Image (tube, rainbow, N blue to C red; front, top):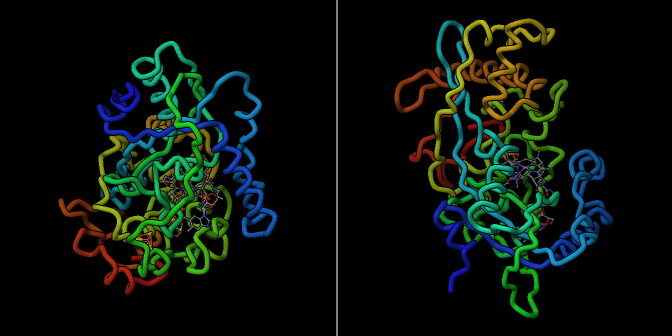
Length: 343
Ligand code: B12
Ligand code: SF4
Ligand code: SF4
């Protein structure tokens, strides 16, 4: 009989997979090996991956299972008033309410899928774990995919003491690439900062636009001023990818007023009532930690769009900071011709 966890996932449109704690050992060993050879940039790993605690589970007492959930996520539009006009910036999939979703799904699991069990959040490299559980496959862009969502998904990782069936002799899967990657190379061609390269699958994360726009401070010299096309993050290696269907886009319901937009674009001290209401809107977006970056990112986005001297409009004709991508302009031929500095 189908396990109730699978029924729970199917009823919500999620994908789920689980396996023994030993999957974490396999992931930990892989990361160590890549660090030892220098393939994994040491400074990047120190600053971005040190929260992983793959021993957390190994040290746990009792019978624990690693449980991964893939939840489809759309992009979200956030609006601003620039030069008297309403414009919309895009927030790629996973950003809106990124952290709260881990807890929402944990509570849902406890209430409806695994009652009277413990379910705890896990601090682990989720793509590496999910690929070994057979939940996802890697693209050459280093993002993972699960049909039918493509790469537009959020991975959630948990430990549970629920009695989930695991085949005797279970072994982690070998991570594998999408069939579509064979002979493709679009993501390498469209990456605005050269973070995807053909000699390896592992991302040059230390050169990914997303790392730069999620980090406060001056823009690094390797980010071209024309690269910016999202309020946070980047979409090029996913949106041009032929393995993805059209990007699902929803309205976030968050609109910054003209006064708030002006204050954001001006930079300066984060004080006073206007900043209080900006903070309130970042809370609504579930992105309070973007406070140090949002003004800088918005300015870079407005400047990049201005540099192109093209008024950007979405298909509904609204003024927009959206990159001008449509289903017709996606795909290998177009994308290969796109410059490395943006679509
Ligand atoms: C640190 C981090 C970042 C960093 C570094 C990204 C990176 N690739 O390491 C930065 C800030 C750059 C970043 C960017 C983005 N991120 Co991020 N990020 C993370 C985080 C916290 C850890 C990622 C990680 O494990 N890195 C360590 C490296 C070593 O692991 P890995 O990337 O899996 O690399 C493995 C493969 O390369 C594989 N490998 C190596 N060689 C080969 C060869 C073959 C043939 C194969 C098959 C595999 C393979 O081995 C490596 C080690 O196991 C996770 C959340 C989490 N807790 O896991 C989110 C996460 C990976 N990010 C996510 C997202 C959505 C993004 C962005 C798309 C956001 C955006 N729109 O801008 C971009 C995508 C950039 C990209 N092209 O990968 C999602 C990915 C969802 C998905 N569909 O896969 C995650 C899982 C968050 C979540 N909870 O859903 N991110
Ligand atoms: S753009 Fe092409 S090579 Fe890159 S992940 Fe998609 S299918 Fe693979
Ligand atoms: S998210 Fe953007 S910068 Fe990062 S690898 Fe993909 S295309 Fe390149």
